[in-house]
Amino acid sequence: MKKTVVLVVLFILPLVVYMFFASGVTNFGRLPVLTEQVEELDAFRGDTRLEGKITILGFPGSDNPARKGNAFNLNQKIYKPFYEFTDFQIVMVLPEGQEEFVADLKKELGALVDISRWEFVYGTPERIQEYFMSLETDLQLDSSGGTSYVFIVDKERKLRGRKADDDVGTKYGFNTSSVADLNNKMKDDVKIILAEYRLALKKNQAGRK
Image 1 (cartoon, rainbow, N blue to C red):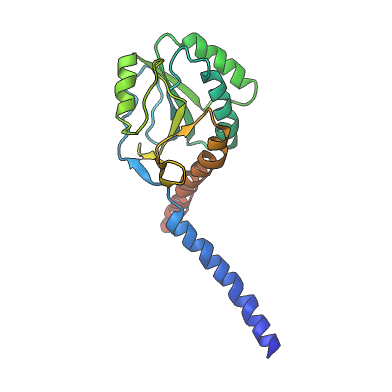
Image 2: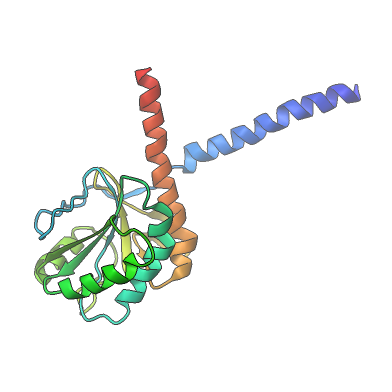
């Protein structure tokens, strides 16, 4: 009798654990859409596009002493773990005239890792403000035309984030000046969206077979 009970437990327990995690993936494995359609980058100088890429979108502004440190935080905590995914990129939208700053930044970041998936586009302050407002977040650009927050945009140009974050409720962006925000929240969310696309790819491949 005891042997039968043990066998049942050994058989049932892994099944229960599997079902628990499987249900978790089903219920919590998608990152919520917060804005249905983010504009393409057609109005900015540069060849970069959002369509077809998982993008971390940022607005460093100009004359902001903290922006280089923020870029290093983003590079270390988010870019380095994920840059080898071919559909992943970081895009920074800057005011025209910031090319020298970008050249210096790329040189410093490039000493740490291959930065071929860092992209930079340029526009007027007015166009950047209009573009930022079209994201429909609860955040604002500062007087330099920038923000320390970055945003996750999926391959269909939908803004992704959290609808029930423990600290802020709806979480549109992630603060690059906070290592904890990048490490404890954003990294998890990027993992989720990458997993979404990997799962969809596997389903498509299985369907073709």
